[in-house]
Amino acid sequence: MKVTLKINGFLLDGARHDLERPHRFAHERVGFLTAGVAAMRDGLMLMVRGYMPVADDDYEMAHDVGARIGSNAMRKAVQNAYRPASTLLHIHSHGGRGRPGFSGTDLESANEFVPGFFQSVPKMPHGLLVLSNNAATGILWLKAAARPVAIERFVRVDRPVTEQWSGHHELA
Image (tube, rainbow, N blue to C red):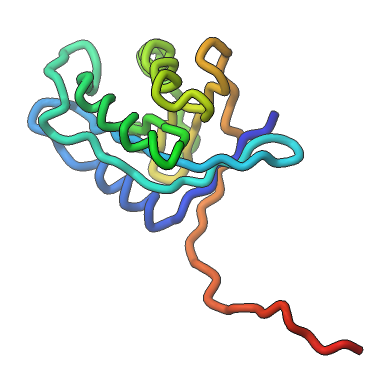
């Protein structure tokens, strides 16, 4: 199954900018994307609807990871994904250029918290995304107990269509 993620360029730039902000004790920032899902002939298309930053007060002190967020941040994220029912993607950045990779800690913690997203929004897939300054890597769980699949393709949409077309035409 092929999974494609489509995101508005302005939204992506805003998320990257937010994730670069310093925090008073966390070494990195995290956030959440919500997305709608469309079935395609060869897989799924995730269409990002919005970005939700994690509030400063929802980070917890941790010396073993770059950032740890508490249950309050997770609760806010799943509430945001509840209506309309949305895919929830945990997102953070590793900076740099080129295709980023997940750390062992990223994968280990995602295996613990992503299945919990299915308790609130059970019919939608959920996952994890890591950004660099010019690329992304993602994985998606289709069901809570399933192994994740790769998000194979990322599409940045920068300009809305400004022309309008009508269904009316002259008959030849």
